[in-house]
Amino acid sequence: MKTRNIVTAILAGTLAIVPAIAAAQGNGNGSRNGSGHEAQQRAQVERAQRDLDRDRFQERDRISDPARDRDRTQDRANAPDEARQAGNHIYGYGLMTEKERLAYQERLQNMATEQERQQFLAQHRREIQVRARSRNIELDDRGNPVRED
Image (cartoon, rainbow, N blue to C red; front, side, top):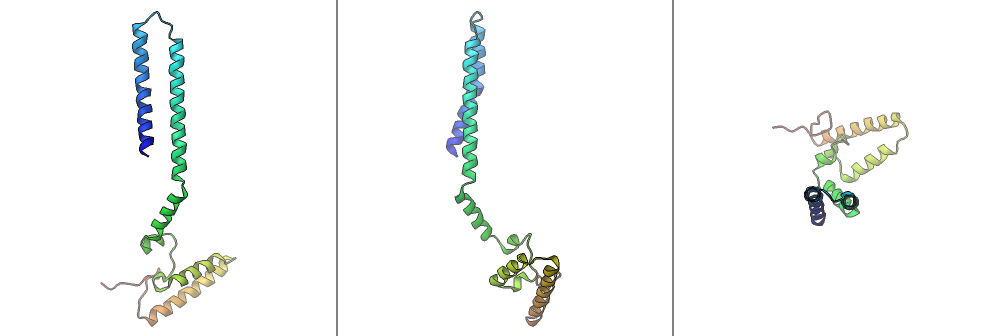
């Protein structure tokens, strides 16, 4: 990352200085033919652009590195339960074991029709309500325990 920043800074500086130098030389030597110098300047700008493009590709490859993806996965795994379940809420989540949650998700994914899913969800809801009553726990509409403050 430091190398990329250094290379980018050098290239940016070069791109900023070259036109100023060319202008100064052009003003001092009005009779001199500038087309050769312009070709050199154009070639230098093209090399700088290629270097920047190469750096972008290297940065993209570094970002998609499997080790980095593994770190993201670990971050998600260590997140609080609420964050992990943000888009995938299970009714009575807090009353279930991890094994029950995995079995629930697997069964739900393997259902072929919407009718099967609805029947499964209704049965699951009844089972969680029975479990909550047996533990003297009141549940809200989403199946979360109601806290008495």
